[in-house]
Length: 391
Image (cartoon, rainbow, N blue to C red; front, side, top):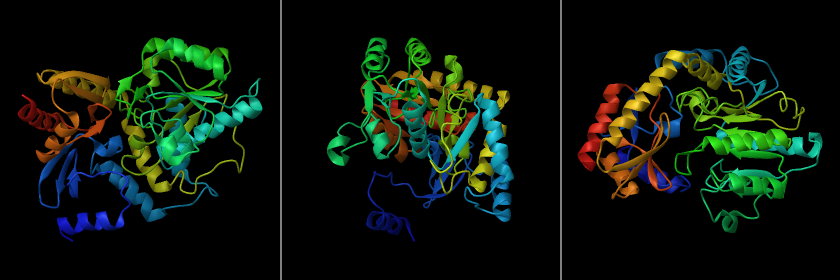
């Protein structure tokens, strides 16, 4: 099929849940992509951060292929070694106790909600099942996650009735947080420490500290959604390390698979035994091939690697701020939001794509989520296009 036929087939046979750039992937290496026409792109989006080790990482490829040669799937009725290895590494690295594996961040957050609801309904001192979320949040696409996502308003009219019991909190507003806790007596508070779809906004330390104290004082579970911000993206293994606390539940996905679908929730002493057999599950959860890729990603996340991520993030941020049209940057580490002084961010994303740099948008700004392994040379190549279009 040529490029025109491929795009026509997508238009005819694929449900239209989102617009696509006119780029047809052919092959890729590192942070560089070539399309069917032979045109080259620097990928500063990495599949919404999922391709954390870039494209074609030899160690990752070898591990996945060797696992596929053994067996590709078991279901959750049987044991396999690579799943045990990944679970142990995640638990020890995070300081949590146990992990439930899913295929995506959406499934991970759904599991987190079920743990929180059961805890509030049957284990907490006082019966409670409300969940608070940040008004600019994004937690997934299920009905419950749509109910707890504030970055796409108007969904109730389209998909309602949404799951009841979810209530918004104004981002970084300590007074509103206290008010909502007092009014709704929640079983849990869920937050992204860096809002992804909500504008790549990092939560204030004071706000997070207040949430932590309220949760500890009132037997409320604190759920940290690190689906996009976790696994090295912000310069530490998990972002909560930079805020100085450990959550009761951590959801993760995207970057841990290196490009294969895998996610899950990490649970602490308080939450690790809430779910019982038969109360939750996932047919493809803990898929052996995905776990093999995740194992390589986890091993790569040592202090040297994370220091390199932080240094490249600092360099990229400083160079972007040197462009006169760039008004400000947001986010943490390699999770970057770009505000422009006069230019329309959506138009800039289209122009960058036409000139060989792949980026994505978020509410009101351009978003950068490059592979964590992107080289300085690839960063400079992308920056040259930014200068060409914006200087």
